[in-house]
Image (cartoon, rainbow, N blue to C red):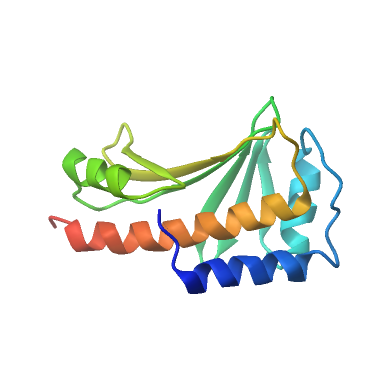
Length: 151
């Protein structure tokens, strides 16, 4: 997904602001409880471990998920329901956007995901900026879906 200049400046500002409180040491993986602490430290109050390797972040009644993979990689996940979207619509998103991928799940509901690879190491800041960019992708995906909803 192409980020606007204002979005890039916002992410950069968040990165700099987070440096004062964040642990900047590189890690090959985070525990679920460490991820909860990082997200709460970034201002998200409703963060819970729903099972091993799965964390829910609720924002304005909406549930975003962070999947903590066994190899240290992180994956974010957000699903929509009640929309009539075609695979052509999803293909258009994937052809024209970066930093996320979309698909129709088994119930034909649109899903958006993104990955943060841990092989070069991760910091608290990597996690919080990754989540901020994902939230922005979800917002853009929501607008995209509502424009194309056949209902």
